[in-house]
Image (cartoon, rainbow, N blue to C red; front, side, top):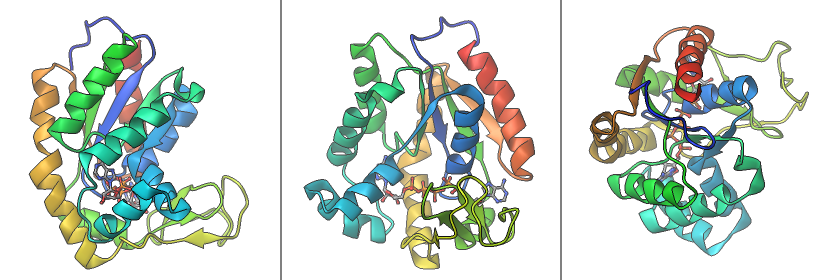
Amino acid sequence: MDGSKTPSVAPVLILLGPPGAGKGTQARMLEDSFGLVQLSTGDLLRAAVAAGTPAGKEAKAVMEAGELVSDEIVIDILRDRLAEPDTANGVILDGFPRTTVQAQALDALLAETGQKIDAAISLEVEDAEMVTRISGRYTCGSCGEGYHDTFKQPATAGTCDSCGSTQFKRRADDNAETVASRLKAYHANTAPLIAFYDQQGALARVNAMGDIDKIASDLGALVKTAVA
Ligand code: AP5
């Protein structure tokens, strides 16, 4: 990452990483620490599926197979979300871009408002760890706070730490077969973005194995420098 570059109008951070790397977990912690807004294309697509929109109907089967939704659909969804006023103070992109076409579209979108990427942060995790993380994942059905059967349990069993809800859910695509497809898609389409952002001088790497709070602290220090 080139720490000497001019900061953009509002911070734009990208969290890159395979399924289960902790992008969602860390993005939510960064939201709290830096007042940025997490934009997860996975969450936006799941909302479109639940709402039964035309894009959601097209995306449903693709997501259930663990493959990538078309660039056209995802870029449209992201463009609409970036236009909402709550993104004005800066965003953390979680799960976008995932292809070179999406990365180029993002650069073009940001250029329209005189913005650019402050940092693309690669969360680095071993493949075997991802399967363990994903198979134990569940989220609050009300606020979306993420948990894990072993690694991150609510302080009071059965009650969300963030909002007090007692309703939790698991994702339809968090099964062994789909995880294998998602990992394959990551290595084929998304991992090349690490070199893409390295060439732009925007890449930073964080070791995302180990304790969640330690990773958050390493990431926080890096983000502080990137958005200074
Ligand atoms: P998406 O929702 O983005 O899923 P993903 O990339 O597969 O990532 P995950 O949400 O599974 O993992 P994460 O890195 O956020 O990990 P988390 O923090 O939850 O995408 C789903 C689908 O939508 C895709 O397959 C595709 O079809 C489609 N899609 C989305 N975006 C797209 C795009 N741009 N283009 C095309 N298609 C797109 O952590 C996982 C678990 O581990 C949790 O339980 C957590 O508590 C735990 N955990 C986190 N950190 C640690 C740690 N350090 N130690 C132990 N446990 C940990």
